Length: 424
Image (cartoon, rainbow, N blue to C red; front, top):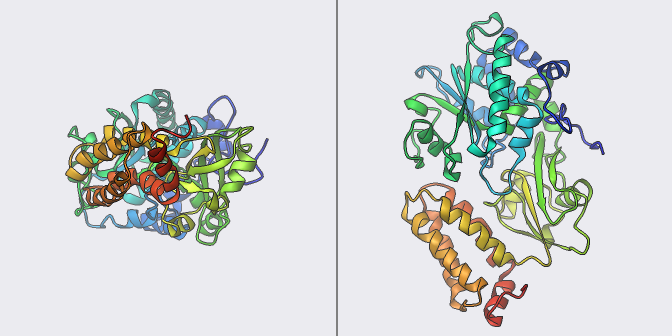
């Protein structure tokens, strides 16, 4: 059934195949690039993106225009533009869907962002499991090059850009910006604590702008229609644009939906995801992937926007909504998440390397019926320690644990008092 909301990123989405270059151009594709190369300075593009209030769609929500503006005018060359298509956050699959729907939207977005950063070299960093997506991108990049949209003197302008696809070695930490730069340079993918920031000294010590697939895909539409149009797509005053929500879990129609920023969680679940499964009742969800906190029933009608979620101590993250019903053990779900995070830590800093396995062990004991009352206090204390880690990996891993203790402490205590999981 067609969506009642305007489809922007999914304008050319087909049920069983990708959109061709011809179809993309028929929908206005590459016209924004023509306009940029003809009429815009690189500062004009930066300002247009800033005016649109485009926040990063990969989880950090940093203003994209401000990131581009942080590249100093007199800094060194070559400069790099990097697209993060690693997408290893559990529950998140929107970027894969977008690449399979309309790859030229992403390619054009990277080119325009590259122009705004005066970048000469572009890289799409993609996870190894996305081999089909990587091949699609390589094929369509070559098609774009043959049509004059990439390479030397694009469309007879003075701007030149090459884009290559780089397959990741396959670790979650590679999605962290500075760890990704190390991975690209063939180093161990440990995070690097700024300053200097990547836009000052990034890949090969050159200025580097790195953003997410969905973020880049918004840029051609902003150039074509203007910043105010983009902001008007949102339902909330604080929001701007649409968002790709990947819904999974106990719903009738799991999938990826393009909806306005600020849409209520209840509408996403009940109307677009087809409601809860028969016999299921909403208990909680993770609103933005595995590194966000549980949203209990009292937040079922919350506006899915950065600010409303921030105000209650949560995050929109990647917009991956993982739905749990009343028969789901959230202690067990948290154990599952912590197994992932403990395995994927790069091991660089003590809080993350030692703290995650410690917390995982406590949660496993509780889930398996060997928990003790003082474990709750230990979990609360250890969760605070992990905020002293070197990068945002450990604090993100703590989001499900902290929210479990805030909203579902009774469930944790029931495990301990019964000496077993009450959902067995």
